[in-house]
Image 1 (tube, rainbow, N blue to C red):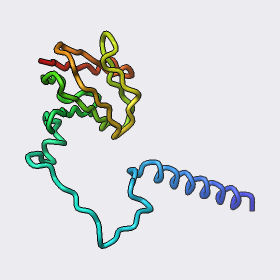
Image 2 (cartoon, rainbow, N blue to C red; image 1 turned 45 degrees about the vertical axis):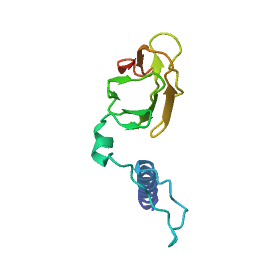
Image 3 (cartoon, helix red, strand yellow; image 1 turned 60 degrees about the vertical axis):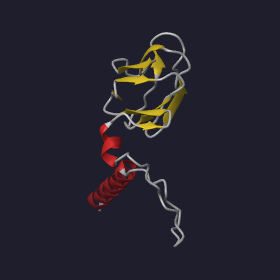
Image 4 (cartoon, one colour; image 1 turned 90 degrees about the vertical axis):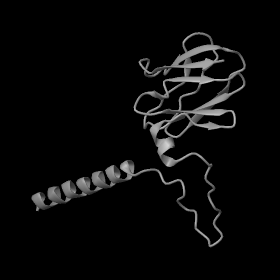
Amino acid sequence: MKKEVIAGIVIAVLLIGGLIYFLLTQPEDKTSGVSETSETSEIQETPGISDEDISSGTELTIENEKIINIEGFAFSPKELRIKVGDSVTWTNKDSVGHTVTSDSGTELDSDLLSKEESFSHAFTKAGTYTYYCSIHPSMKATIIVE
């Protein structure tokens, strides 16, 4: 009888552990609880920007906004040339947190960015701005404002 009780407890622990693992490893579904209707809004694509451009880290320009992806423990692109008045948006694609922090001064000082969170900054003065991730100091990059 004791062996059966212990076996039952072991099986229950394994099942609960497996369920917890399954729940923790599932991608976040931000649409859960939202029902679809026949009147769904259309997603409009931005002309000239492909999914391949976005996933490859290609420099993208939308009016005066530049995009930098944080992915694979790197800023992509690593060096970016922009004009005075342009803004840059960094988006964390990694599953761990990162920051955008100036090497000197306080020009760039983001909060900790979790996955899919972004930080934007408009550059109002010409110059070279070097920055890094304060959590992972080997992650370095440069913005050149002309």
